[in-house]
Length: 170
Image 1 (cartoon, one colour):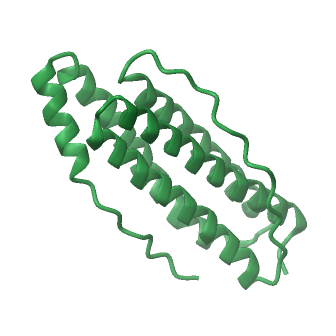
Image 2 (image 1 turned 90 degrees about the vertical axis):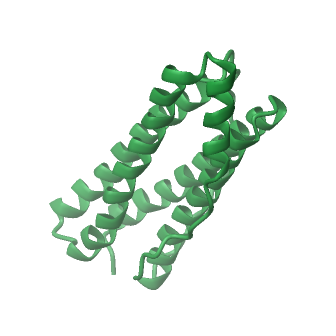
C-alpha cells in the first residue's frame, strides 16, 4: 500500500500529463493551421507521449491497488504570435512537469518509498530528454527559422519524427 500523499500527488500528475497532451495537441493544430506539417507532426507525437505517461502513472497506481482519480482537463488557452512561441511554451511547460515529478520523488524519499522512487527514475531521465528536445527546437528555430529555406528544412526534420511508445516495465 502506498502512502496517501504519494497517491494524491501521482493522481495529480496523471491529470497534469493529460493536460500536457492537450497543450501539445493544441500546438500541433496551430502548426497544421500554419501549414507547417513537420512541426505539427512533432507536437502530435508529443501528445501521444504525454498521454502514455499518464497511462504509466495510472498503471502504477492500479498495480499497487490504488484508485485512479481523473479530473476535468482544462482546455489550453494560448494565442501564438509567431512560429517560435509554441516551442518556447513547450519548453517552459516541460520545466513545470520536471518540477512536479521531482516533487513526487522528494515526497517518496521523505517516507522511504523506494518502490515509487525506482518507478520515478525513468520519468526523471525522460524529463531530461523532454527538456533537451524542446530546447533544441528553440535553438534551431533561432538559427534558421527566420529564413524561409531554413524553416522549410527544420519543418522537414521535425516531420521525420516517429512515435515510439515508452518501454517502462512495472
